Amino acid sequence: MASELPPRRHAAGARGRREQVAVAAARLLSERGDGDFAGARRKAAQRLGIEDPRDLPDQDEIEAALRQHQRLFRGERQPNALRSLREAALEAMRFFALFEPRLVGSVLDGTADAGAAVCLQLHSDDSAALQRFLVERRIPIDERSRRVALASGAVIEAPEYRFSADGVEFLLTVLPLSAQRTAPRDGLDGKPRPRANGSELQRLLTEVSSFD
Image (cartoon, rainbow, N blue to C red):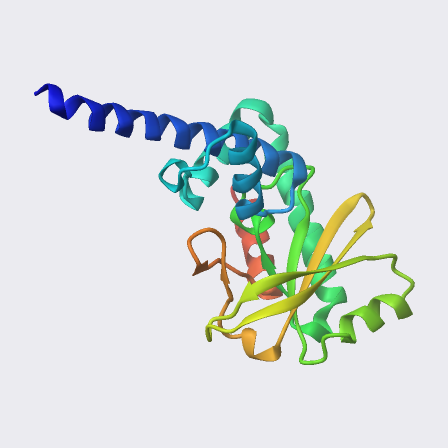
């Protein structure tokens, strides 16, 4: 019987460390509002000095910790903030209609609060088309790129543009036209994350309003 105790203690310790990382990552996500689960988990683990992959939570665990964090610290403000962000997202999607926008991330899944960024995936085979669109309209942008795994298995460096309008942060990722139909593999589990087009977001806003 004594020989069974170390594995059990390790399992309990691993669960505790996973919870620690999940809570710390959730706090970072709430502060940064960018929906970068992988980055938040990596930074949380570094701060806690945790390196063993067995001690790292998956995306579902971090999402659960994020929702708990918001219940504790955001209270009744979070639903109002979420609705405002979804309305801002819908307006932006109409503005960027030429690029077949899709809403992703915390504003869609309901974990966003007032500090969250509205994350949109836009589509064009001309990777510089969105940049020209923004420059022509004199919208100040912060440009960068990120690695995105497409459904086909290809990994690309996708342009990203961040800007602020009316107090809301927007993060735009430009994907090829072929990514319209099938969402790229995203998040910690490598699975496609939920997306919504303008009509679907409008329907979501209407459905939520009917319960207010």
